[in-house]
Length: 248
Image (cartoon, rainbow, N blue to C red; front, side, top):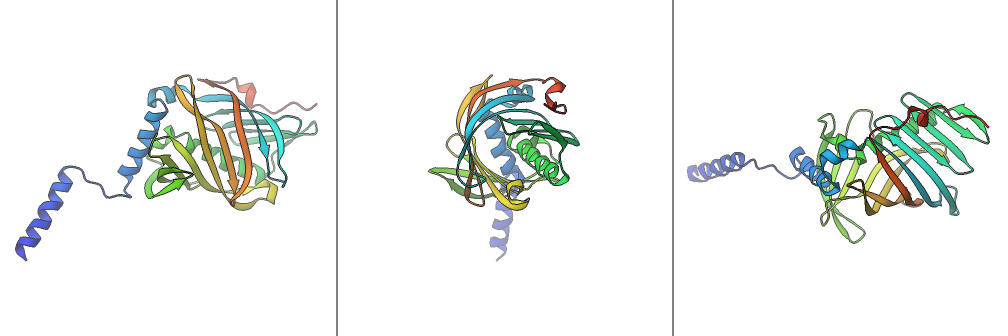
């Protein structure tokens, strides 16, 4: 018995000495995220890309039948976002302010819509990955999963006032291939739904690999299919980009 106890203690001491961490502990999760950051191009290159503009063409399924759309978008971390869907609406989020323009009329975002947009912006912060180096984000690994034909490592991300988000990283490439979190759907009177986003067609944008195809599902149903036709990275965008839209 004493020999068994001594052997067990000896193994424990050896594992501690080499820094052994059981699956599920934060060190594992941060290593997975770190690998993904390297696969994208590395921390230094990601840190330079603090803002983006891009153009999408896609199909929106939120109201039933698929409707084609063209959109122009801008984001600047952490709290600025602009989405203009051609001929339909423009939504701007700028810190604690937000506006919507539709039919040539501009209004402040109603609270439920503002809260929904803020939640989505914080989810975008999480999926951009580099902010996860901040220890304010709690990370842990979950069981591996399949994403299409791809085997993926899964990391759960938590932080106060942020959506609890699952990130799925390809074992083959290290890149993010899926994210999943709970949000409130404006098209369903802000009912809480489970949102999954699938990322593919990674292309180089100033030295950083960025997904150019995204498929979004809500409660398992197709919501948006988008393809990026143009993307530009920047250190800073003009503040006017995120100002209150002008009425027609």
